[in-house]
Amino acid sequence: MPIKNGKQFLDTLSAEREIYIEGERVKDVISDPRFSGATKTMAHLMDIQSDPDLSDVMTYNSPTSGDKVGMTHIQPQSRDDVIARNDAIKVWMDASCGMMGRSPDYKNCIISNYAAAKDVFKRDAFDGSQNIQNFYEHVRENDAVTTHVLVNPQIDRSKPAHLETSDIVAQIVKETDAGIVIRGARMVATLCAMANELLVMPAAATWSNETRDTSDFSFGFAIPTSTSGLKFICRPPVAHTNAPSLMDHPLSLQYDESDGMVIFDDVLVPWERVFIHRDPDFDLKVNPNSYIAHSMLMQSVVRAQAKSEFMMALAFSIARSTKIDQHIPVQVKLAEMISMTEFVRSCRITAEHDAHKTEFGTWVGGIRPLQTWQTFFFEMYNRQCEIITTLGAGGLVAVPSFAEIAGDLKEDVEKYFQVANADAPRRIKLMRLAYDSALSSFAGRQRLYEQYYTGDPMRTQAALFNSYDKDTHIERVWTMLDELEKRA
Ligand SMILES: Cc1cc2nc3c(=O)[nH]c(=O)nc-3n(C[C@H](O)[C@H](O)[C@H](O)COP(=O)(O)OP(=O)(O)OC[C@H]3O[C@@H](n4cnc5c(N)ncnc54)[C@H](O)[C@@H]3O)c2cc1C
Image (cartoon, rainbow, N blue to C red; front, top):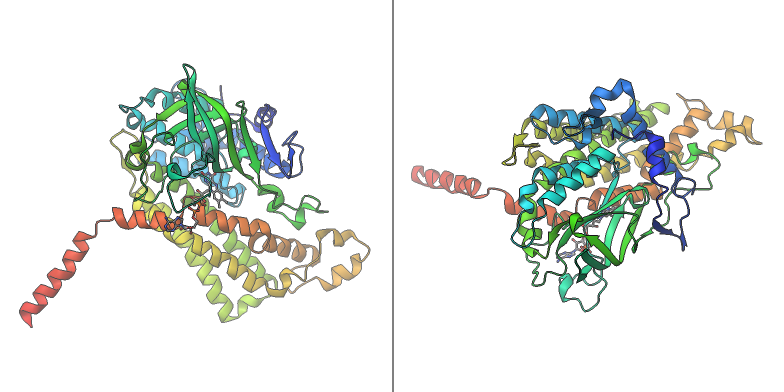
């Protein structure tokens, strides 16, 4: 089956799923105003993928069916394939200002990577290699949209999950001929309200001293989001669903992708959908060997490039509208925006340059530039928001609803909201966009997302330190000092 267009994607959302928000079960995510903006955006991304003019960028021929399938599912066979996939990601990211962290490419890259590394799933405890391959092919051939959930709920972080007395954490409670039965919760499933499949895997970054002396908590699987007993409880929307105009909240009304807690109410996972089974070593020792961080971060750096380019363009536009860009201190801030954007672009290009073939025969991006990007980006993103609020200043709140353009005070609005380089409608549109980008609850959620979505930065940065070759550098210092001492 070939790629889905927007309408075909929306049709998949009619499957019976248990999505809850604000104390009620959602009847239809397409028409519910708390989800409708993001579902429309998702459909738009699918339409872009189906655009015949973009076919060469957005699709490739399936190795099994020969049909056109999404480029973001590709298992790269060369550096050129890595770049081609990044180019497709960039098209989607530019179309959503990098604000839809969980557009389907994120999971597509991760799933195709897991399947490429399917040999790591051949374990004494359980052989999930064919299952992960089948799941990948299912997702690719059906253009299924996937969310994932990796983290145990925050109950008592002073001890590992299995030492907690409660049964809140998702765990295996039963096994039958049909599969494993899971009870408990996991967090956070971004995009859960718009996903067809849920992937449940070990977290990519954990504390290295976490002990796991039980295997009830060790599993990996994927199930349709319509599976019986599976419930998603979403946070309230960050979008202002009663806004008089889309132009008042242009980002939140389009890109609020939803986040949810996942409840497994004795969910049966069929054996053919199980990838990891009672194998605690997999989580800590084997998972990193699958190159999962490479694929996750490669998609992320391209998204961050699009997002940084958008934030930079916004800062330029704000500064030009009132001509503050003529002042050197403002130019310094804009230069900072440029440098952050170029930093991200450089990390992407270096990761593409450092791309290499793995022992599985497929290609991945170079990990060091990706980890370097990951280390700095969430703080850079905070700085991008800070610069936009600094430049926008009082103009961010001395701005009315776009509806005032046609309201009772139309003439006053046209006169008093114009600025040196923009008439009132343009100025109001721009400042509402700036507000939504840097100051709104949507912006706050974006900041939190950048900080945590690839895992706790404390853990990921400690992982970088622990995996980095330090001895060569330390040796260099001692050699230098020894040689200096000889000459002293
Ligand atoms: C917007 C958003 C979207 C997300 N989407 C997804 C998703 O789609 N799928 C998914 O699986 N996850 C998702 N996540 C969850 C994300 O993976 C976690 O938030 C992240 O792994 C951090 O874990 P935590 O939130 O449980 O923080 P915690 O582990 O509870 O940590 C909270 C704080 O305590 C500190 N801390 C905790 N334990 C220790 C310790 N032992 N030693 C020292 N310090 C400690 C941490 O450094 C941190 O500062 C999302 C998160 C956000 C914010």
